[in-house]
Length: 229
Image (cartoon, rainbow, N blue to C red; front, top):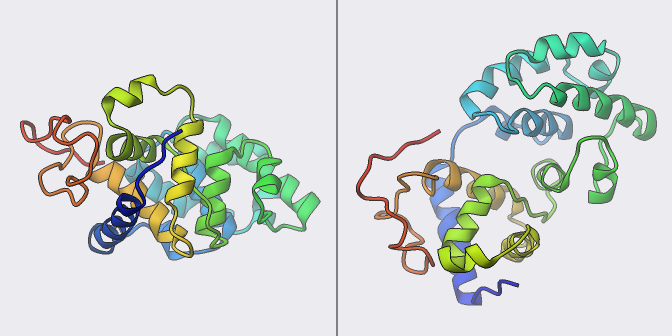
């Protein structure tokens, strides 16, 4: 189990939120707290880059503005509209979620982790995203970008090689969420991992976390140009 120092946790929270206030991306799904729209964005973003998702997100919601509209659509039409995002099981699952939500919950997505994860195709990450981004709950998230940030800042490359499975990372993610700030904090984590603490050529020199980062200066970052998604 990873037990970060409380002072480091507080410093990380403050600096990440300050970084997000300055560098956070303006994305269309951040202008809504509607659970359905949040869910659509999260499922579209699975294994797909942001710039490919934005136009399809708008197009999809123009055709299916509510869960009820999506539930009443034909599955083949939903799949056709999804093209060319790929990973084509996603529209099938989203359509199933819509139908089940209308049938079981009157068209309103559940506001509990258990209720969400009982729906087809919703795992721990997607449930946490809906709970924090739509319902304002202090739920953690853990995707590839978040895992990389947590691993670099709090664990370091040597300890990371010894960790097995996701439990340690989920425990760490849950411990880091500042009460009442899960929305901004989780969005900040994803942006920070996607644009600064990136897989290759991260922005280490100006990074606000470098003073306590367990991987600095082990991660090579100054020799190549930065790349952003």
